[in-house]
Image (cartoon, rainbow, N blue to C red; front, side, top):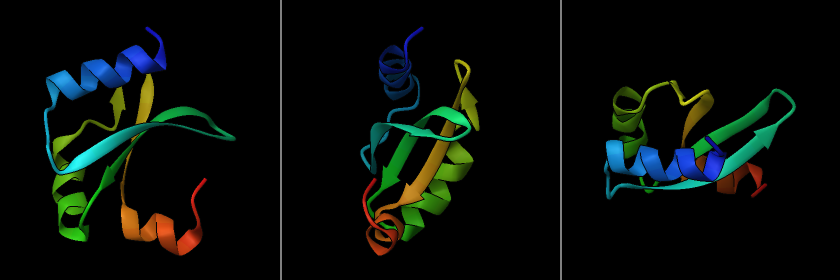
Length: 72
């Protein structure tokens, strides 16, 4: 399963209108980034989403954290 297919499948299996999904990559490999609109949502979503999905790591982040450190 490609990462794009995994993101689409994750959206269907774990529907949420409190976040957006993107492909992410760092020095440890590929992952699915889940961006929450509010800090409170990120806290809730970390409990909701699995840490790994279809072999990809799932990162839940608050958009304010990304803005603080810069978009990647």
